[in-house]
Image 1 (cartoon, one colour):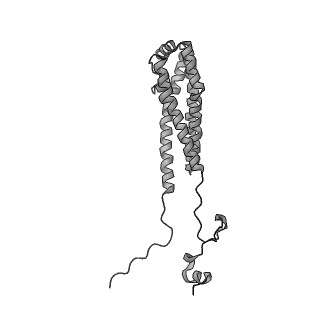
Image 2 (tube, one colour):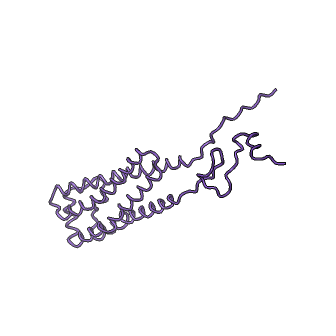
Image 3 (cartoon, helix red, strand yellow):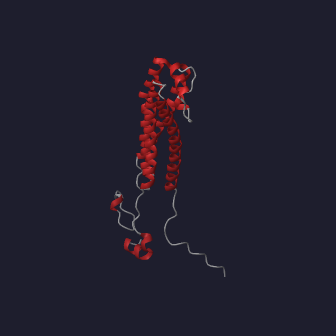
Length: 223
């Protein structure tokens, strides 16, 4: 004859605590009962899709649209987005002369369309990533500041580049645009560092932990 639930509890202690009845919710399980594993939220899938879309959009703009535009319209001159060390007034004057009014209008159109959406999408996707996988509030704020800084500097840099090419004789406008280009590259490196840090933290949180309990009893010495 099988033991009753009370007899099992008296014989084995809390280790034989019964599992919650089928269909019981997580918050309905009593202390000491075996609790079912919580269902994984779909937020991870949403964040993954957002990261993929935003990264592809950013690569589309900076690795395809701008290089093609520079080769076709700017006479092969390097566009400011691909100058991590910044650019000087002489380069701005040569680029403005090569673009002309029509080319500069097309350049500004890129900044107002895909060049506008790319940093916004990156900022939103990476904010979701940080919020989902960062446990510490202080680290969450610090990482979010890097993400927001990258998006804001990218947008401000686009506007500053357009202003510098509209009047390349204005040294202050060129210097501002150049400084924002350098800051964008610095923040991009920091954004990649944030991505690696968040990924490492997420993997550590997913790693299985040894069950809490009494240490194993050492084996009896041979007689």
